[in-house]
Amino acid sequence: MHKVKIDQETCIGCGMCVSTCPKVFELNDRIKSTVVEKYRRDSEDRGKVPKRVKCVLEAEENCPVGAIKVG
Ligand code: SF4
Image 1 (cartoon, rainbow, N blue to C red):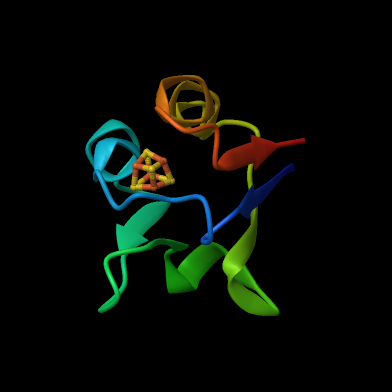
Image 2 (tube, helix red, strand yellow):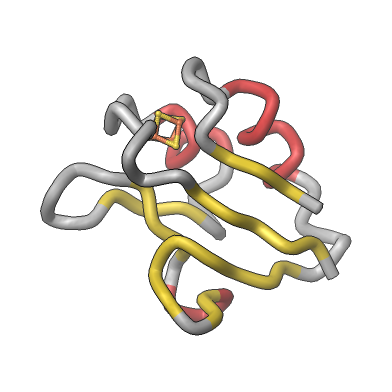
């Protein structure tokens, strides 16, 4: 599994992660990136995603402010 963590303080709500990896990311009503409910763990800024969902790595790479960490 990939662990995903979004730094919502840093997120500027550009939507890049949502277009790169819509299976995993969506914007909340404050226009901050969140993990979709299916993969969410504990809070909206954290998730666990199966390794086969490779777009999380692309989303991490593409985020213009480095707000996504994938482990
Ligand atoms: S790509 Fe980065 S800055 Fe843009 S919405 Fe996603 S987490 Fe926020």
